[in-house]
Length: 586
Ligand code: F6R
Image (tube, rainbow, N blue to C red):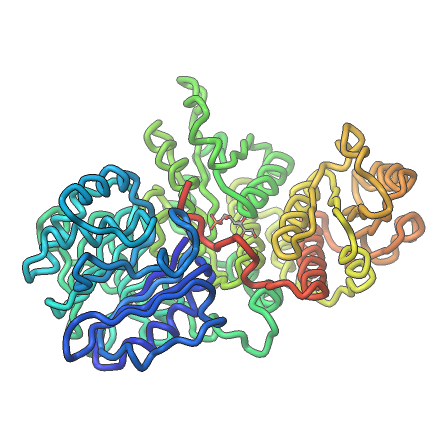
């Protein structure tokens, strides 16, 4: 959830690290900090609660060509200056930044305090600085290697010390990637801050400890020197620039035609094709928007291919009783995760493997943890998603799912889906202003749909609540009268997804029922649907297209509705309060 970055090379470290932290802020943004190693010795630190953009950074005091930085999403200790990283040892000679959770920190802290160490924060992380101090006698690599032996939990660590010229990186179940430059080296939680400096990267494995110096890196695993390959990343620098858009979310919404096209057309490896064609049932494990993509996949797989699919919130899969012996058959467990780092999804996948189930990952991030756990990976082509709210990655997940469906049930609807990017492009032109005016003053908004539009309603509600802070709920339209009707008033508009097909008639009845209880209804339907236009307060027409593509166009319209409502309410759209993009804690 937190973002970390480190640098060693010929350039001044502090400005480069602050620039990198700005790119990482979507991982957490309640405090930040930088430590450098000035050429005249010691460690210089600046740390502060709040966002980088809201703070003046005293970079003049942070000289040196070697440093680390952190942007935080608080887990242990409130977000204040004291708890901001970097954390230091007692003598202020060692500075560390950490992403992850040290589960045995309370026990370690008590022990270290007993040995005379003084703590200055409430974080779990600070114990690591003191543990390294215990082992440090001039060789920082060795001190880190000894210290991590005592740690239980997850960590990506970057460490510098006044008495050692190297930057040390250590990884266990938290993402950490190294960037290889010319006479300089980088380390970061993800690729975003590296793209403007290098396209050559090394993905560390769990258990790796690396010593970075301007000329290169030495990596050790289980006490032995190892070599990790240098890979080239296909992501472009343009992907992390706003490119004239007011927000990343809007930019990413408008990238969706291209993203769908590229993901649907991405090569399917033999391993993925084999895994999919052998499956006689599928379990999807995912969280949040990715879970909604899984629900859509289940509907399409069962209705179009006759393949049973069960969809799990990954956090529940973990604690559910194991599959009954023999019940899984030739089952395939598919983890859907944009970041490839969501703790619950990774744990669910590990659990599936422990039960000898075959696994497949659908993810957006090359080299992410899920790609190391799953038997095979379908890599989406969405490029980096910066806005905290998932948009283009959701559309890419649907593209990947649809591609898998064409493998499962032949290419019968390949041609239809190959027009999807056109339909998505047309939906981007939809005018949602009348609906925005209603939603922006609402106390609560309901999103309802049936069949494949039920997951779309769930996703629409999630987008609305996370970026506007308006209470929003997604419901299967038929369920509303089993309780939630009690909440309907003129202040609780309902967004009804009423597309042509089997559910159109019953949706019209549901809309009338909601209106009879006083709720204003905004209907999303196809152009020319006079019946729908007549019964709703606001009609949002989208271009008519095949049912499977209407799921995509409806999704785009709901993304635009959430975005423009948040804009009208002057919300912090790309960084909504309390959230972080990559949820690496349970
Ligand atoms: C919502 C959103 C989250 C993520 C969820 C899973 O807009 O972004 O609900 O979908 O945290 O994240 P990934 O897909 O990275 O596993």
